[in-house]
Length: 323
Image 1 (spheres, helix red, strand yellow):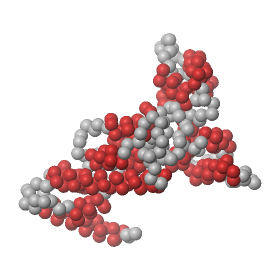
Image 2 (cartoon, one colour):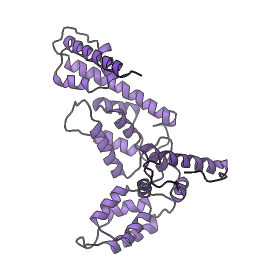
Image 3 (cartoon, helix red, strand yellow):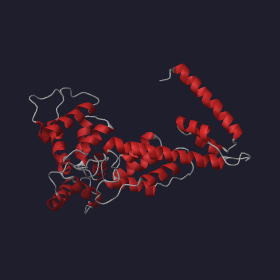
Image 4 (cartoon, helix red, strand yellow):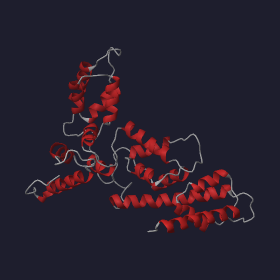
């Protein structure tokens, strides 16, 4: 690992090499901005390996831009393979699919070549389920093309598509059991149609499928009413009879649990994609000694791991661990 002095020298050397590269291969501001927006390791690759056929050009903007995008695509393809291997041994896109197939590696690469994104945005996209990934790839239409970085725009669209599709984040290889709208969407519904706490609790206790129907299809007879408790409760009851799945943990319940016990994205995804029995076990029995922690990620992950092993025949622990 470089210390501060070595890092400063390294940065200074790279700046000098970039200046020589620009002197040798003149380019416009857009191509320059694209190069400067690349991660340092990609800047280094461009400087070291760019080799145009015609060394007498007066403007290399298009060639440099094309070369950067090709390297970026290769980089994304490698990161996608690494992500798959880390999560399920390279089986992403090869598992059984119910409704929507995951994008192929080539499709992801083409998208990221056209719209460069950073590692965080890339992982956020890949951690979404198939329907979200397909929607992002098909519907992402930025106002300006050829920008050096679309991370923020892509992340925003992924968040939006997760809400629209009504799914949780996807962890490859593990079936997601929580469904329905997020707690945020339910609160937006409550703001639009005010109700008392009893009606609100009744809605929260409904299955995710029923919640989704309520959020999307509830249309009161008198939209100008100041209070909709009775109407919402009646609608939930009418939808619950044919659709209620008492064994399914809704996304809103998990969101509510997360508000009480904050955790990072990785721990929350682990909880969201755990089996229904495990989710119920966590919501019912997770009881840390300290209720004032700011992060319960490790404790919740450990609790899930322990309960998972127990349910697989490992036997119950002799005494409750100190969560």
